[in-house]
Length: 188
Image (cartoon, rainbow, N blue to C red; front, side):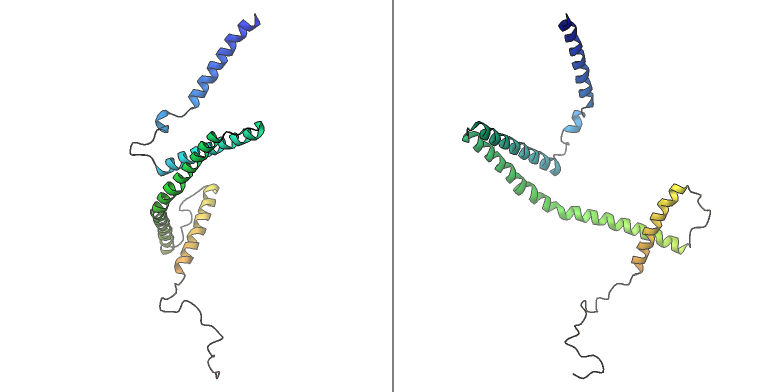
């Protein structure tokens, strides 16, 4: 009798656990590649995951072979061939593509940094041109003033950097050595 009542309880708990697990899964549309193609990051992740799975399977096969004292060269050879194939995809397929787009990515990041610096410099120069912020112009919380202190420190550093004179291109870039040239007023 206990087995008859336990089975429906187990089935209901299994159904509720399955429903909870299904509701926690991401939508199928988020797992599919985008309409315009697969991204390089997706391809790299897929190939790397397949490589790691094949490596884990080969390691498991080696451990079982040591444990059982048997050796199955056919499976081992197939796994090694798959490992080499995935490694070639990563080294000769993905890496050159990453190197090709590295310049473009670096260029975009540099442009964003330059724009951010220019905006901060412009805001700092506007504050300096208008004088200091009038007292009482903006009543802020204590929490907000801490953030402004950080911003003003960054702006002050940006202003100091902007006022730093740059070396003239006409001047030599390396200082002259002291051993070769006599000083003024000294005889050689």
